[in-house]
Length: 232
Image (cartoon, rainbow, N blue to C red; front, side, top):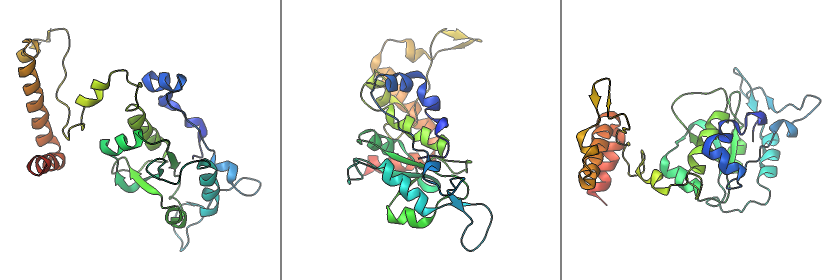
């Protein structure tokens, strides 16, 4: 649900997600919020109650769009989540992306202006998700990020299931460093262990590097990882 349906599929129409879209492995429907607006100019917003800058998306307008987007969707939110992209939402994680990848569908609401009327969020018990501690001009970029993270985990999209098992966050750690040819570049060699042919050593090195990177760059993830190891 967006005021800018022309923003989609955007980057989702390129590369592997675009190929999967063409192959019918996933489907995208854009719902133009303006269609449900009122008056000659199809207004969808109004001034904030209590005063203040900016405009707020109206509950009645957004409700019409939600009912249209949710037509035929199951009531079980695990099968068809209803999500509002919001900087005050819970942080989006790889774990949430995996859950969304297993859903039958997702309805994403792209906010604009100062946000949406709280009543519609409460009435529909809408899940709020944030892709980071910053503010964008609208939810379209955030929606594409969420879609991309989920769609790439769907069967057949990447073509190599092992790719998603070794990447960042899959085991609660950041991904280990990657190298490829040439073997020497600007006088710097690929680490010897990666060319040793010893798969056991390679696996241990990659795990050690992932742990070191996570410990130094993301102490929050490292703490969670340690807790899981100590309390499986």
